[in-house]
Length: 299
Image (tube, rainbow, N blue to C red; front, side, top):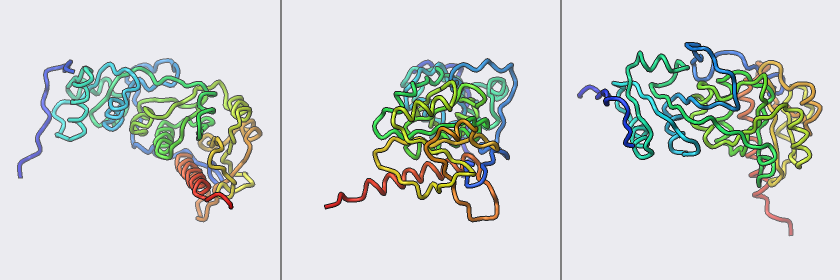
């Protein structure tokens, strides 16, 4: 059997183209196994971010979605051939996006994660959507994040949310992680399909959601209701609220949600990672909504 072919240098740019029943724990190793580097001074946070995308699936989804302008794509030379790399190159050609094949050393000076898979892209930042726009969409299913700070957790939450059919995500401007390269890598392209609102404060955002008729459900260790027993109407706009790693929901957020619900735990461990708790909650909402919509009307 012949050895796998290598991707050679292309000659530069190709211009052809607690939240658990008890307490959610955000600690531990990041889901993507990598840490963001500090090779250059961090830029002041502006908006949601998402202007540097790392990872093969994230970059391909960026190109396929076509929701924002892509300035350039970098690929390490001599990578083993793979269909996804061919897809990325062909998409760059079709979309007339510079496709640069560079040395591993040159690439490493620009990459900000350890798990970049030899591919990165630079694009316009992800735009913020107004909260009232998210809240008034038909069948609104929102995810509100009250101070999630770990990039791996946020990326995993966003990937789950997109797969569950969440129609919008709400994040605060301060004391929370936004769309860093680690988030975009872990989310694997979900950020291209999830409208996001950047708000000044979660308590104020919850007040607006309540005024707009969105039912808000906070996941909290001390919640007296089980998430599995909450009545949910198929067409009722709903927002799940997840708290920060370790600390859970803030006091004001606890006071302003319509329901404080727990996720019953049956094992010996007393916590779920916030991303895992978010996954359970998102798909429980999907299950309950589907079950209600499938009930035939009474005679």
